[in-house]
Structure formats: structure tokens, C-alpha cells
Length: 141
Length: 142
Image (cartoon, rainbow over all chains, first blue to last red; front, top):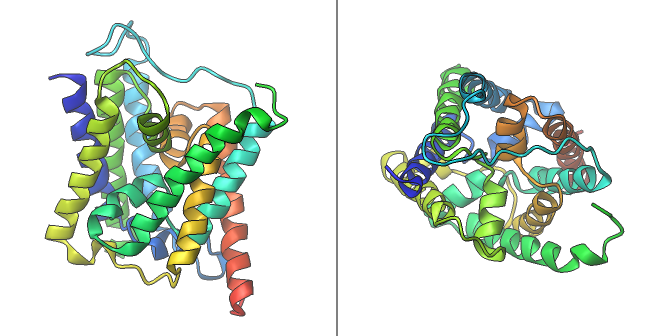
């Protein structure tokens, strides 16, 4: 097994999980964010995923390295910055507006529908624009 | 009940296993916004695992379309213009905030990362506000 095979399997299982959970349907995501008509399913998705990954993290975090690499590549930052908060807020606004976050959107490109394709194209454009304007923003990190 | 609790829970466990694979073997966080932006906008010399992950995600989507045609049913009433604006905000915001629902919401929270917990609370709160605002603008009940 190499890293690419693992990543491919991870992507495959991730997409199947999203589909089974109903997270590829924007109405279920919007429903979670809609206090007037609350749909709890996203909470159970998060709970299942966080419990499994939380337990596996506890089991492996003391190991000197992962199985296929010499070192860990996990984020270590702890600082809560304006950039983190504003970025998360903008993401939240878009998430509620479209009902897609990046994972379900990329998965739904396979549906052949115009919506997810337009969303993903605009998302990649948004990423590009951010990388271009970042140095003009008043955040020092 | 199955659609509200059981399937989401099993789907969540599958997602947990997917991110566990990436953690245990590759030693990495499965942050989909980061994987996507780095695929397009960063020069990386650590292999093609990002492209492989995205290929798996899309092939998973193809199998879902084949085995469960209703998987991608969209009754949200969001048109293409809303989706384009939404996509742009999601792309811009996730790179600025270093993550999305997968990287912060699942991987970060389960590692008890303070940054990820804060980011997740913020994007859920703003998601709620966004849905409420959309409903108001449409003239529906709040």
C-alpha cells in the first residue's frame, strides 16, 4: 500500500459515508442550520465521525510516526486569530446559502447536475481569489 | 427515523473510518478544502495523494449515483446563482480560515483543537444566520 492508494480509499469511503448519511442533499444540511424547521441528521453524522476518529487518534497519537511516513503532518497551531474567525464566518454564510460544504460538493459533481458543478467552480475561484488578495488584507499571521 | 438517525450515524462512522485511514497510514488531517486548494494553488512535492483522494471522492459519487439515484436529490430551492455565490464564499472562507467541516469539524474537534472548535462554532452560527436571512429575503416564515 502506498499513500496514494490510502488517500484514494479514504476519499471513496468518505463519499459513500456522505451519501448514506444524506449529506449530499443540500436540504438536509440547510435543515440542520434552520432553527425554524430543525433537521438533526448532521449532528448524528458529526457524532459518528468524531467518535471513530477521536478514538483512533487517542490510540495512535503516542506512536512516533504514521504507518507510511516518517513523521506526522498534523496541525499544531493553537492561536485563535481574526483571520480564523472571519474565514469561518464567510464559510458559514456560504454553507447556509448553498447547503454544500467542500466534501459533499465535490462528491455531488458526479451527479451531473449543474448546481454542484457551478458551486465547485465558484469555490475554486474563491480559493484562487483569496490566495491573490491575502497579502493585501490587514492580518499579520 | 432511519433517515434521521440511523443512516446519518452509519454514514458518520464511515466518514470517521475514512479520516482514520488518512491519519493512521498517512499521518494527515483529511481537510477537504485544504486538499482542494493545495491541489490547484500550491506547489507540493509530497506525492499525488491529494489528487488520489479527490479521485476517490468523485468515484464514490459515481457509485452513489449508480446505486442510489436519489442520493443527489436537491429540494432546497437554491438556484444556480445562489450556488455560485455560496461556492465563492465557501472557497474564500475555507482558505482564509484554514479549514471546513471535515478539517475543523471532524478532524480538529476529535483532536480537541481549540482553533477547530472555535471555527466550527463560528461557521455553524453564521450558517444559521445565513439560512434565516435567506428565508427572510424570500418572504417566508422565520
